Image 1 (tube, rainbow, N blue to C red):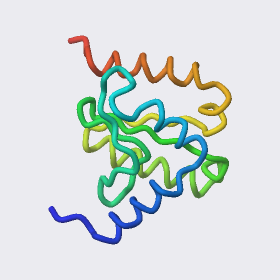
Image 2 (cartoon, rainbow, N blue to C red):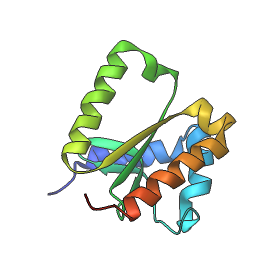
Image 3 (cartoon, one colour):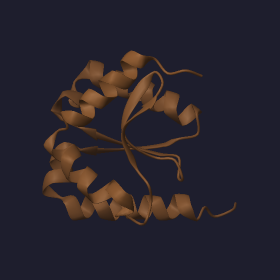
Image 4 (cartoon, rainbow, N blue to C red):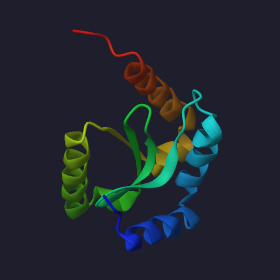
Length: 123
């Protein structure tokens, strides 16, 4: 399936204009620095662009600013998450302020999630 060229251009623009939280998270995740996992940023999973994506784990990480607390954004994010989960992706969300102020707690949570996804226990 060919991706919409406009979506790819928009993703590239978003990489160039990253938020402070996205920049910090990228410095941690890039070049297999976190658990030796390869992450991509502003990755297209049509019709959406996700903040961070790990193909190996099927993991999507979304960083949310204050605008995501508004009713219409909450509904949009829920719809988006439902779509991605239907494709068997695990979607996790962190608030920008937590990434910036509680980085260690966010990374601890992310570490635990990555460990669970790497070593799923059979029922």
